[in-house]
Amino acid sequence: MKCWRLLGACAAFWTIIFARDRGTSRRMAGLCACLLAGLLQIPDARAERDVVLVHGFLSNGRDLATLRSSLERSGWRVHQFDYRPSDGRVAIGELAARLKTFIGQELPDGATFALVGFSMGGIVGHWYVEKLGGHTRVSHLVTIGSPHRGTLFAFLGITRGVRDLQPGSRVLRSLATVPRVPMTTVWTPLDLMIFPSWNSKITGAESHTVWNLAHPLLLEDPRVFRVTMNAIDRPPAESRDGSKSAP
Image (cartoon, rainbow, N blue to C red):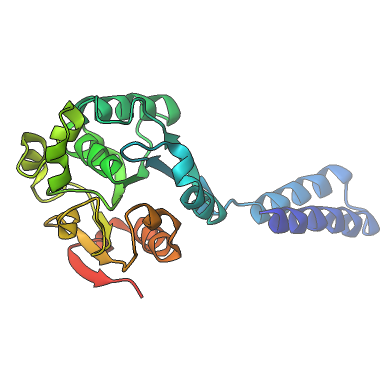
């Protein structure tokens, strides 16, 4: 963008000089310069696109800092939804309602955006899309290491949010339908938090396998970032079902 503005300024300067040398009125020269500079300052469409990030269980927005930086360097405007508490005491549906409120405060009415959720945050985002009208605004949903079909470790918890992540829970059963928006899941077969690890996949979403040693390390893996940005960069018509392995 700075490069384009510099070119625009140079164009304006030389248009005025060129006009003066030939006796053209300053007003006309200034008009031509402004028009030319404006054409050269047309913003990159990507710079105007928004993405909302949702962190996971026992986590916060700081854990998504590397992903956020990667997205911002690629021209995305990032909005971080930080919810408290993140220990599972709040049900998935309630967290999704808070997410909807946050989006209403952060983004103009009707504006579309990409949605990326890590671990439990992916389930929160999925509930928002499917149950709270998010499908009318979300251009693409990406979940990273999210237990779409539950994790056996959730049976060790007693709080509402953790129970929602148990295999066969009411929440997960109600979300086990073909997604209403283009959706991508990213997961590692070596995930010991989501057990079994393939429960991070869901019918109707494009699935990407990234061989990473641990659940939290997915948030530091450049391959995960590449899959995420490739997914949200694509037009909706190109985002459909399929399984792939990230190189």
